[in-house]
Length: 197
Image 1 (tube, rainbow, N blue to C red):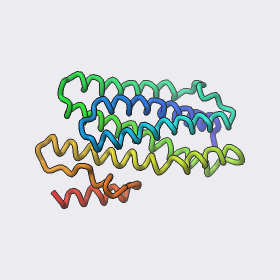
Image 2 (cartoon, helix red, strand yellow):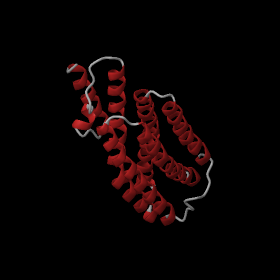
Image 3 (cartoon, rainbow, N blue to C red):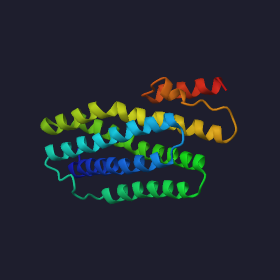
Image 4 (cartoon, rainbow, N blue to C red):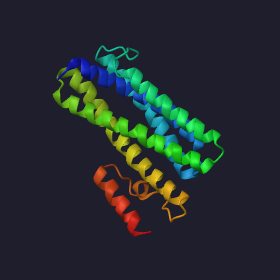
C-alpha cells in the first residue's frame, strides 16, 4: 500500500470530521423539524467523538494530527463551502428552504465521510501490526454510525423535498424508523415509502 497516500487519506478523514462538526452546528441553526433536530444533535456529538478517535489514530501512528497533506486543504475548503451554503440559505428568510439546503449539505458531507471510512476499512485489511490495529479499532467503532448518518439524512432530505413539493411525505423517514444502516436496507426503506404514498 502507498504509505503517503494512506497518510493523506487519514489526514483528509480527520479534516473532514472536523469540518463535519461545523456542518452539523450550522445545520442545527437551519433545522425546523424537532425529530430531525434530535437526530442531528446526536450526529454532532458522534462527529465530535470521531474527531477524537481519528486524532488518536494519527497519534498512535506517529502522524501529526495538525499536519498538512495534499488533500487536506481541499477537504477543508469543501466543508467551508457547505457551511457557507447553509448560512446563505438561512439568510434567505425561508426556514423550510434552509432546512432542505442543510439536509442536502449534510448528505454531501456524509457521502464523503462514508467513503473515507470505507477506504480506511480497506486500509486496515492491508496494514500490519499497530497500524492495522489502530485503524481497525477506529473503523469497527465508527462505521455503523457513518452508515446511519448517510442513509438517514438522505431519507430526511428526500422526504423534506417531497413535503415542500406539496406531496405526501413520511416524516420521520422510513430509513430512521427502520434503523437503516446499509445501502440495501436504505433502498428497501425508500421503496416502502413510495408504496405507502
